[in-house]
Length: 247
Image (tube, rainbow, N blue to C red):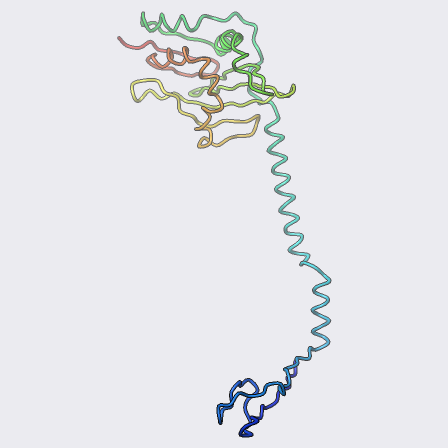
């Protein structure tokens, strides 16, 4: 509740009474002396004053405060869960093998020349990767990020390729899933997703995985080119079948 007090302004020239907000006399046009104006004073209701002060002292709404606290807790929990999933070793990542590595690169060259088909088990390919990359660890090592090994997992229709690197003794695993497409008359790999540790990564993001695997692709460049010359590659559970190109 408010009350307002005001007065008329009397012109000193013609004695005409003017409204309080006027600057010049409505009758003669002379400048009015506004020093006699009584300023409007708003007297605030004591109850309104008490309510406003109490609101200031209470601070922000408890409901709003609790909402933001809950959101922060959920984001923190989601972030922590994501980091835990990234740190966990994948459930499907073959252990290091001590099997004798077949000479897959030479076999691929002969297959292309003599039109012979090839079949390899997952263990054969992983043994070859261990052998082939053993002498290239120095070039594969990065500052604070040491290369440990690479491995494949063959499933029906897909191949999962991944590597293990270590930071201060802690292992990090990155894997990418591929399926083979031969519709264009040559073998090409299409990414179907991936993982960091056990955290799934969307295929659209994994389309840029070549950046992550660039040094490995470079180290295995000869093998990749030879496989690309084959007629087809079919993945089965635990094995791969390579068909020789037609001459």
